[in-house]
Length: 307
Image (cartoon, rainbow, N blue to C red; front, side, top):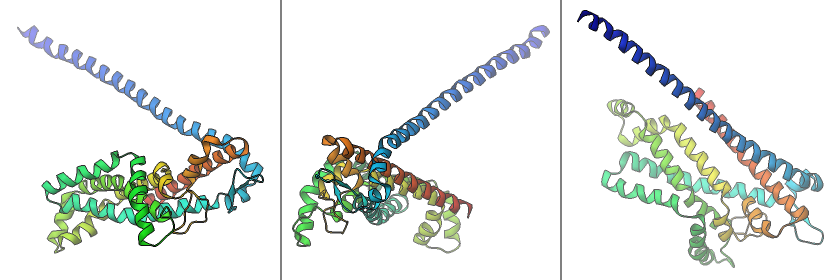
């Protein structure tokens, strides 16, 4: 009996040793899989970057960087073609800024309402409705904007054509709401309840607590939501193609305009030669534009965390 008792620890020791080796082997395999897919993701980014650079640089060299970026006339199919993309560039900047100016406050306040204020039965109704906005195809947004929004703008502001920058801004503002609301709400829900309890214990009201304690504590998540919204607004093409008018004008609020994305979408199907190369150059500029915005926002977030 004593020999059996003494043999038990050795048996368990060998079993635990085998399990430890199996776990280590499984961890090495999983690390290898994660590393592989991470390299694949980076490889795709590098491949896209290289393709856009090699496809876009020839047109920029032929047209001239100054004429291409700061030219105000785009006549790609004329007998004497001109390829100035400044109207497209400014339109994308103004349109994205306008959409964020409208969409970010609405999205943030909606997220705050769902996270902190709304009763559970009401939140259970509003939250799926907001999530449903993310599943609506871009072409449906564009169709509704073309049928409802464009005629409304035309009649309200007494314009000859309601397809303008304002219509594009309003459509983009609605399209970025799901990303901003869902990510911001998640960030607000992750704030420890102790922070709010401490604020209330010090005499702050609930609204003061939400905006002066919860929101600053969740600022990194809210900033990530804004980054996602900017990416959605800059990269949208189909809905904007249907409501912006698609004329290469310098942007004003009530003029028909063309975004960088729609300039590519509307001409790529029939382009050739230098025109096609110029469209790839626009794609390269758009790619660099998005990269610079992401880098700038990440630097701001990093400085905010360090502060």
